[in-house]
Length: 261
Image (cartoon, rainbow, N blue to C red; front, top):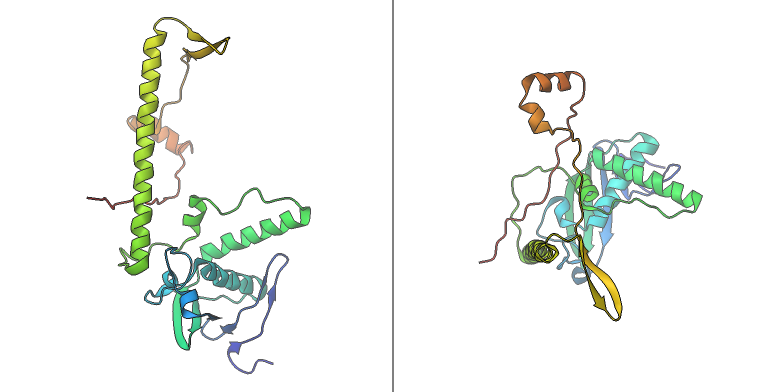
């Protein structure tokens, strides 16, 4: 029997989800998730999504799995009991020390979590493997909290990890550009060899094979682009009035600013 504003040992069950929150304060609309772990086993290292960072506040200081666990709990309790949670606390006792992180509950993220849970339940019932999961960068970015601050100062392991990741991204970008140039150079060299013949062939291991050939692309009609339509005010007004121009939601992408000397 619950005799205070704090709900303990509760369970929330829907058709496709189950959750056991450690503690919920009905009065303040907060949820508490409690963890225990040894200091060195819990401490964050190279992976910014695993382990606890004892110097960071908010959701950045806790493992990503725990962050989504709490968001899932809040979503299921609201779905089951109509209990809307606004704030969450993750408490950690580690080697006798107490740590606490406070972060907000993201309604948009809850909807995505419940959608995935429902989808996975259908896959289980039908005994078919899931063909679509939140495993690409677009899904990850859409599920992560909105940008609330202009910048955040990082240090220690998180700083070193971010620099190494930025380096890998820059190296990959440089390799992509180099390979694109190599491809263009190779195609230009083959074009010179082809000259005005349809294809070039050669004898390889006793068999004549085709090495390269010209590929013709016929001209045809094309629909003019939005920039061309915008240059014609009358055409743009007509397209806008008749619903031919749709506005998309804003997106965001990661731009690496780190450059090595």
